Length: 202
Length: 202
DNA sequence: TCTTAAATATGACTGCGGTCATTTATGACC
DNA sequence: GGTCATAAATGACCGCAGTCATATTTAAGA
Image (cartoon, rainbow over all chains, first blue to last red; front, side, top):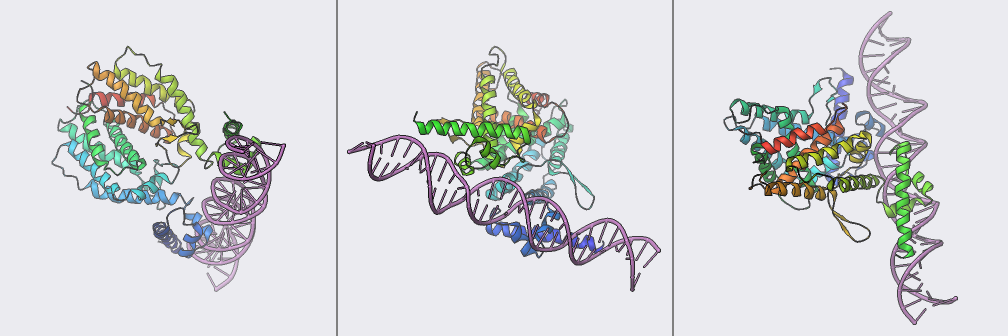
């Protein structure tokens, strides 16, 4: 790796770390880009060579957090249980992870405008799969196994079913983040997964 | 109504109209609060007596648009058809309404930070039901009728089922808004409603 | 090592959203 | 109409995100 590339990588990391520290200390709104760059030992303009906006940092924070938990969860779901339980375990564990810091999650989900879902190309050229697509893949794999074990109807479109599962997960999360009440939304998700498995029609 | 109240109402309406016109003409980002107030014949500070931020206008635009379509839809769904069809008709018509102007919908959903879902008290003191709750009520009513006609299992929690339906509607909308592809998402919703009615489990 | 082009860093500057102390208009009461 | 209290309007002002012309650093080729 060239000197240039190394410096670039280090600067980006430094901005990331410093801003994370300052956001924790004083909150997102009370931290200025000036402060971040001062503390990181770079000029203000340099910040915008690395991140298009101050808000965009939140998007990267969230992405990083999600990647971390996905890495953990993906390989820690028991393989010898029915698909429905796998899916429940996965989404409930995800929910419980989020429940640990509601204020942080609100910041990461609400304080930037677009909830980005499109894939992007990272700096090192490797095409990164966006977390939404990754999550759909994981759910789809669970469903596929379930179908092979005759736990799931054979005529179901797995992509549509995965999206439906993601929909109820995402919706529960949004409602929870908006709510001032202090309830656990993992239980909420669990009962909705049952609905999707059993259907509401007679 | 007092002179004061009348003036207030007129000013609010004027800001609303002028900003709507300017946003259409030049886009949201290219319209400044200065321009809006100049055109509305008021001082800049006055704007913030009526709307907390420039962004918040978008929230009110969306709310107004939703109220309008809900008013129309709520009373135009045939009553002599099965619950599943009522729900499909309702959500598909809603989707088709949104499909008419994707760019506008993106603006209304993405350009302000929080997707507000909490209810609020309007100026005239009447407690207004937020559109999310209104939608849940409508879906719940459909489901209740369906349950009475034995189209829906008797042991289903209607609130949870309504929320699940809203989840798939909202999710389909989000995916569509994020997508650059030019597809219709009303069909998407329809097949997901089927999943919720029939279930994916064997 | 010298030259040159391209990548990156810089910070003064700009534009705009939002604030607030002050002024003006309204309504209530006599 | 005159007096006072309160609501609303005002616009100078401020802070900060984001820009951009210029300066500096790196890489590559001779």
